[in-house]
Structures are given as C-alpha cells and as structure tokens.
Amino acid sequence: MNYEEAMQYIHGTLKFGSKLGLERITELMELLGNPQKKLKFVHVTGTNGKGSTTAFISNILIDSGYKTGIFTSPYIQRFTERIKIDNIEIEPDELADIIELVKSKIEIMVKMGLEHPTEFEIITAAALEYFYQKNCDIVVLEVGLGGRYDSTNIIDSPEVSVITTISLDHTDKLGGTLEEIAYIKAGIIKQDSDAVVYPQPDKIMRIFKDECNKQNSFFHDVCFESLKLKEFGLGGQLFDYKDYKNLQIRLLGDHQLCNAAVAIDACEVLINKGYKIANTNIGNGIAKTAWPGRLEIINTQPLVLIDGAHNLEGGQALNAALERYFSDREKVFIVGFLRDKDYQHIMELLAGKARLIITVTPDNPRAVPSGELAEKLDRYSRNVKDGITLENGLKLALDSMDSDSMICAFGSLYMIGRIREIFK
Image 1 (cartoon, rainbow, N blue to C red):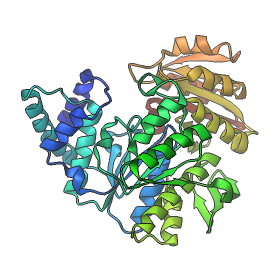
Image 2: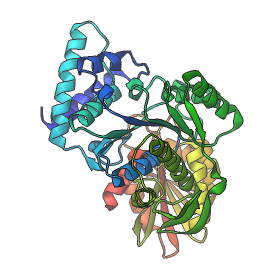
Image 3: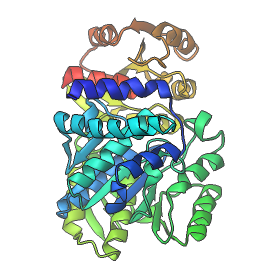
C-alpha cells in the first residue's frame, strides 16, 4: 500500500459514518496488541482551545527533552499534520505502512462479524500504533469529538486530563445543553489521575468536580487572576502568569493567554509526577508555539487574517481580537461554513464590522452553498456578494482592497486551510 492507496482506503471508510462508542476501537486495538497500554498520555478535550493548548503542552515537553507524540484533528493543509513526533509529521510511506497493518486487523474484525471501524477510529489506531513503534516518551492526545465515547478514550488513566472551554457545538451528537456536553467531555477524567480544567460557570465546574470525586482524581482549577498582559502587537504577546515572568507567545488574542495558563498548569502536574520540566522549558515551549489557522496573519501586504471561528465562542474570540488589533482598518470578510455550524449567530455578531462580506463554498459535502449563505447574510449587512468559489471570492476581495483595508477569512477550517495553501 502506498500513500495514495492509504488515503483512498481511509476516506473510503466515510461510508461507515461518524459514530461514538468504544466497542469498535477496543476490538481493533486488541488485535493490534494494545499499543496504547505501553504509552503515557496527556489527554486534551474541550470545545474551543484544545488545539492550541495541545500545542503549548507539546512544545514544553519537546523543549524538556521528551520524545513527544502529538495527535490532533482536523488538519489544515495536509493529512499528515494530524500525527507528529516532536512536531515532525509522519512520513507518507510510514503512514501507508501503518494503515496497511490496521487494515489487515480490520479485515479480521469483519470476518469475525464485528462492525467496521469508522474513519476516525482507524486514524486513532494508526496514530497510537505509530507512537508505540517510535518509542515515544509521552503522547499529547487531542480528542476528536466529545471525550467519553471518543475513540481516543481507549487509553487508560493519563498522566493528566486537560479540559478547555465548553460551549455549544456538535449538539446533534453531544447534547443540546452545556451540562450534557460537559458530561461527555468529563469522560476523559480517569481513575486515580489528575484533571486540569479551564474556569467555567459553576454548574459546569460541578460536573467536572463530581467526575473527579467519582474517579478519585485530583481536580486542578486554573486561576486566571494572576494572568497579566504586559505588551501586545501583531507579532505576539508578553505576559506574566503566577511566578512565570515575561512569557512570550506568538498567538494573538486574550483567550490564548488563558490556554497557555492551562498548559502551564498541566505541565506543573507532570512536574509533580517526576517529569523534568524547568521554568526555562516552559518559557521556551510557550514562545515556540504556533497554531495555524487561528488568528493567523498569512500576508502583510495586503493584510490577510485567517481564523477557524465556526461556533459562537470562536466568533466572540475573533470579535475581541478584531477590536484589539485591527479597530482602525476597514475589513473585507470572506466567509464559508458547514451546515451544522451556528453561523447565523456568528455573523449576527461580526457582520457589522465589515465593509464587504464575500461568501464562498468550502470544499466539503456539508458546506452551505455560497449563494444560499449570501441570501441568509443579507439581513445582517447591505453589502454581501456571492463569491461562488474560494478562488473567485479571494479575487473579489483583493480587487476591493486599499492600503487601509484588511481581509479576514473565517469559518470552515477546510476553507481557511485552502486560503493558507494559496498564500503560503
């Protein structure tokens, strides 16, 4: 099996749907010899912020000298971004070999009359097998969807569970209330472990505390009161947190300071468990962290900002960043969304900031067609244009620019990944 054949096989399993539950992944990992039982993990879940928090923790561990596996989803430009060791993506031929092995075990499952694993279960199994084969010291494992019934929850008790912000997203699968979603996310808290939790409303924190009590796990409530922003600009931010002074991050937005604080607290749990992580490693790891597609400036002349805001909380973070960093610029928005996202509330919040809104159709079968999106956004702005394709929409935006303008493209990660590819 070569890389192209591996990709065809993975994507061909879309017909088996997206299903939560651990039955299929349990059988598959058994047939692989349960490589996950020979690894140590930091397990990360949440609605927003889990990707950048994963990146912060990973970079701190890498700077500390640990061989660090990193599993994230979705990808921005290349499939291999999802599986990395020390920030180096899995080689295409290595991925093909692993997928061929996983496929052989799935064929045994099917012959046994068992249900075929889903696409994400196959990718999870491949990643865990790869990290085991490469003798990773620790793996920072980002949940795909939810937590309790997500295939990444096949692992035993992690070194630390990390829970970022909870908001309404994927309500068709996770539940229609914050409490229901929090219960699903809390499922990554395991027996006799530790949980580091981003501060949330009391009713949500109670769910996490109750799960910790049930699992005899120690609850770590991150305190943002000691967070102090000292400097900010388009190049990044300088801040203090607890006894850590003059920390630098390249990521924009107040929420990224909070995500960095959560990552630091998670690493302090690891320190208490004997991991050799110095203050300098924390500072270096935070400073080195980049997270593509999140308030990322991909071009300066003209200024082009991309962001994966596809739910209301993400829209609020983008709104705050536009106020802080770009209040003096006229804005042209390029937007594209998937149908299951709360894009109308996002645009209700953001549309008034744009001189022009251009709608495009992301390359995904669940995408809202650009013409339909333009019609729906007409109620929020008097200047909405149907860009039809991404390339045409980008041309319309560039043609409308002057020296004081900026392009802000946000919504579907499939769309911003393609824009990033065009500019990079």
